[in-house]
Image (cartoon, rainbow, N blue to C red):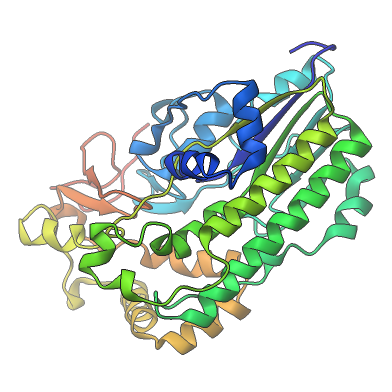
Length: 386
């Protein structure tokens, strides 16, 4: 980029390209249809085959997951033999180079984004996010604080726990929240673009991601995965997912107009959303059954390990009604802190050759490798890898 270029990038987080193209062909997304007639439809490749949690860190840092080491929200720490929550502060986003070249930049709610402390333009993190890291909204510079406050709160600050595809009231609520969130995000982005006139702006609509997780069964009701499980026969709630996509299209149209006739516009998605059987939860048991992993007996556990095991069992057995209350009143950062010790089973590391890691998409197996893991098969005490 240079001082004479203006670029507006709009991320429709987790928007399914085939679904978008179908809605364009049906004239249900006219703004994207107009952009397509003036531009090009290109395929964006991302490391989504590893997991959806690594695509945004890769995009921001221009590095592969093998380099930046982020493959999901929960990361394995071989030194402590435990998990840590991804925080994003170790990555340098590509737009910092623009700032260093004295270009004005505006960033709104890019998933997993680190703050770099802009003095002009705007950067806003976790204002109605799908993925929560710090659990609080951050912004810079202070000059945009009043504008953000005037459009807050974002509807997604209301936490909704959905117990399943027959939880119609919760499904309807999440749909309405995402629809309203698109409208509020579009209004805030429009105001920020008009007020600050950044040369490079990146606005992420995270509401597509949140709504798609819960409403996709009515986007493709005839898919065999849904048909075999009887999900296609369930009642639909409003708004439907294609109505949420249409609202995103309306907001994109407003932002393109705000950017001005000379701005270059890119609308993109790093990964899509399709029917799936869900996240695999059998790997830990399977590895134990096949002799790759072992759990310690009750007598072999420390008192803290016993307490953790009991807490995990109680949490797992908690009635749905209590879970809804728990997730509604407890801040996300607290739930993450409480969840961390129970994300992995208690392993007897001296008899564990391979173990399963928490996944957001696929099944992941980690090899308990001597020289890398602090505790490995045949060694039951911590040691330094330095």
